[in-house]
Length: 117
Image (tube, rainbow, N blue to C red; front, side, top):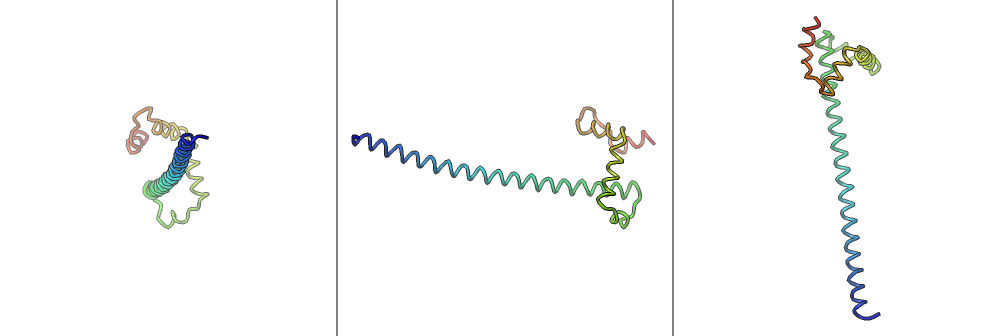
C-alpha cells in the first residue's frame, strides 16, 4: 500500500478507536442514569405508599372511631379484607373511577357524605 493509504488507514483506525471509547462512555453514562431514575421512582413509590398508608390509617381511626391500639392489632389480611369490602361496593368503585379518570369533577369525600347521609 502506498504511504498515503497507510496514513489514511491509521487516521481512520484512530478515529474508530476514539469513537468506540466515546460510545462505551456514553453507554456507561446511560446505564448510570437509568439506575438513578429507577432508584428515584422506587423511592417515590415507597414515599407514596407511606403517605397513602398514613391517610388510610387516619381515615380508619377518625371516621370509624378506632383506637390506635385496635389499629395496631390489624394484620395484612384484615387490611385486605377492608379494602376488598370497599371495592366491592359499586358506588365506591364508580366514584373512584371518576376520580382517577377525571371524567367528572368529583366532590370532596365530605361533600359526598353530606349528600348520602
